[in-house]
Image (cartoon, rainbow, N blue to C red):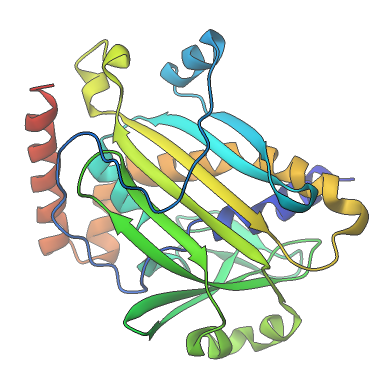
Length: 294
């Protein structure tokens, strides 16, 4: 079994985990406070060894597979991002640009068709509103496996740390049926619907014991969790799907870190700078002042 195949199947679950915000990105003023006790998605407690905590501080991810239904494994990952929670939050909730095409991004897709998108393998994205709730649709095109499609409902909470961006699979709303990109109809007809997808990001300052330098105060403790079933008849490739999850988790971290390091450039190029950039700089400054008191 090729490594490229393993990686592609894993992205069915992991890329899906980012689909939790509306197509038009609107960020709100964050709250800097501690001890958020109300979470939308339960994430299992995962203990770490001394070696693993050393990896975290060094900027490397710690990824684990946790037991889930039907022999599949849920993906859990924790890493310390090299920038502040404000930047991290904006990166992971910028769903307006899931299918953005730009030469700055690496090409991804099937063997015959590739696009340079902000989020790898997302060829189409759209939103609709059902009962007052935004629903996000995504079409994923990858090598070696059939395309996948899904709709998810999202819920975001920045009332206190850890901030949470959570999602759960929704039914096929109108935007899921029609999509947005008319050039993707062929892929949509071939696409397999995800059977299960729920999870969350949790974003917080580094715990006090890891704030060894001033720079550590402007780093982020990130936890990512996804419990997903890619749909279709998995049969003998069940073990491949589980292996793919563990392989692809660190790649997801790399994508977040890549975009966060050039976030001001992204805001200028794709959000028109202006108010979005001013808000970002203001919120970062406010966070820096707040974390200095902790």
